Image (tube, rainbow over all chains, first blue to last red; front, side, top):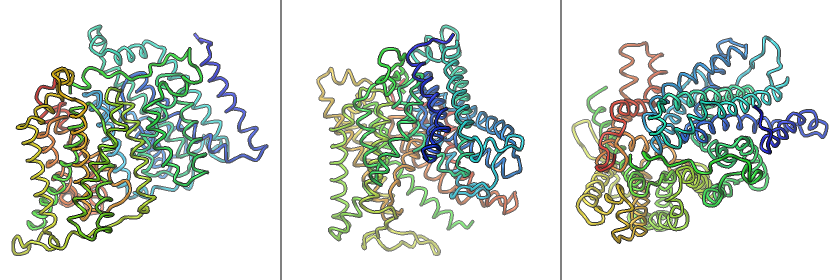
Length: 328
Length: 308
């Protein structure tokens, strides 16, 4: 089933480089870059899940960072209560984020288009404020963790161990999984519902159920990114759920190219690099980043993966305006 | 909880509600007429607050600062419309979100660079500085009263404009069938610009009157933007009456919830539990309200007429 085309080769190249990095970079004394790469990969995991929603499902969520934060906080609270096994923490994070996605998704998906965007934003903000009021777990200031999760007592999943490889493996699995999901019947129905919900409904699919399932899956993947973010930073704070984070995720997805195989990954690396490079020139790098986004919105179409792979990328550049959008 | 305190909280809620109305009204008009989702609306509120601070420093007069700030807020809105938003009306929501997100990032950072990251305060003008004796124990600041009245006055004005005037008729028509309005020979470009300018000025006005009450700081518009979204969802997009009703509801719910909830829980649960859960629940209250209304009425309480 593997279609060997240019986008696939590009991904193989990226993953090969990522795999080589932890062996090469320490030799040239660039261990800081490794931490930066982990950051980019964690961002990419969350962005891939968001692209499942936007690129495949046409559901523009502006509250996706909430799931990252929920994953991170669930794991952190689990750790504080004495659960050390990362697999148990993973299970907990998936459960909590899945449940949250199920409830908020069922409500948010009663609407569509711009309503959906506003509601996800509101739920994200609700999560943010709930986290700031968690006084026993640091409240506003966040929570520094003194012991990290282990894999059956081994430190392989910690920064001192092989966290880099664990994150890389997770990224590979998530990328592969979402890619397969997109190719499957499920993905096709999701895209059909994006392009024409009424027709999809009439054919006999419950658009609501497919969308909700995608929403729950995306939320759970984002929570995995959150769990690993906690493991990497050894710290959690409500800022993880800040709506600007959700905005950044959206930027990553659009920057990379909606619904493309490599888009979210390219976008994530680009954002981390831009932040790092601009930040090293000028402290107020946001004064440049902001107008950059405006220019991007006005002029760029299709994102980075279109620049690199002009022919083969199967993306749609525009998320469609569904008919309910304006009418409601 | 004494009755006096309850009354004060009600007034505070009303004041917060009118402020929310000023912001949400512009947002819903812009969305209703142009189908444009403007995340930068909150940052225009912040700009209003900073403008009144800056002009107050320059001129030393609060009244002059208010007038100058409103003019500057209008100008900023028109400039943004002309150079950026105009080119995004026909585009998908994602491009609009991206562009306006960029504007937020830029203006927040700019405020930080010019005025510093700390909070600024500005005193209410002298002739509004005192407080009124309402009952024997209850005094309430004059300035807050005036903001409530100003908010209500603007609401009435806006309602009359939208329902009774020619421009209002065009706005309502534009919100339902923009193509038809354009086909009938109306200069839609100009109409859009007017709507956008008025929306920007309303947000700026909200920032101006909020400046003496809340702290002025970078990012102050972001949270209120999201609350304004909640208001619009509850009220129904494009509807001034709906926004008004929802803004007052949200203002009262939020303000009263913050004080009543913890005390209410204390009646049932031990204080340590209530003090932890109370604030968390209070900050979730308006979102729970939104969710509940969505379950019953997905289109909002009073959706704009003519919309499907």
